Structures are given as structure tokens and as C-alpha cells.
Amino acid sequence: MGEITGRQVFAVTAGAFAIIIGVNLVMAYKAVSTFPGLEVKNSYVASQQFDTRRAAQEALGWKVTPRYAAGQLEIAVTGPEGQPLQVDGFAAMVGRTTERRHDMQPEFAYEGGRFVAPVELARGRWELRVRAQAADGTPFEQRLILTVKG
Image (cartoon, rainbow, N blue to C red; front, side, top):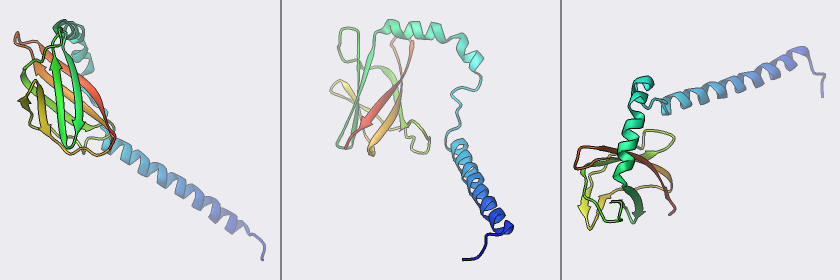
């Protein structure tokens, strides 16, 4: 085995740093390109009505419960006494919590006190963004986490 030269030490050190910097650049690109981080365009404007909207929504007393089995997503919306509700303008966005490429907006049908849609969900954690409107026009929005186990 020969002696280690200054050029060899420099080449190994430069190569190691090049790999580290390259990986960091790829990870930074992936982080920015898969999750924009924006919920609203102007957070100050959105915050001005937040408490009013939240209080109106809480006064409805609705409870939203998701369930997934055999390729079917069911979302139950119940009133304060636990009775099923058929609400106006029901829609739900289904997606992963970390990236938006899996986002989908299934067409729901009201069946047996639940909103039902055929959806194929892989194992893991899913986010549901439910939107509806009460008969008096009060908007309802809620985020739910659904874990698919099998």
C-alpha cells in the first residue's frame, strides 16, 4: 500500500462534501415542491373572521365521523342529539397529510344516514377536509385524520 497524498485527502474530502450538499439540495427541492405550505393567501384577512366562524360552527353541535372499509369511505354527520343529518353542499377532500399529489374529491351519495363514496385508499394516514352548510347558511369546515390499517 502506498502513501496517502494531499491530493487523495482533498479528493475524498471534496467528494464527501459534494455528496452531502447534493443530498441536501435534493431534499430541499422535494420539501418545497411537494408541500407548498400555504393554507390561505392572506393569513391576516382570514384571521379576522376566524372566531366568529368558529363560534357559529360550534353552535351547530355537529359531529363528523369517518369510516373506511372495503373501498368505501363513509362519513357520518350527526346533530347535537346524535341523529343523522343530511346537510347542504356536502363535500370532502381526501389526501395525504404531507403531500398534495394524492388529493381527490370523491362524489358522495347520501345513504342510510351517511355520506358514502367509492374510494381506493392505501394503508397509512389520510386527511379529510369536510365542508358543508347548515340549513340557516352557517358554513361548516372540519379536518379529520383517518388511518387505513389494511
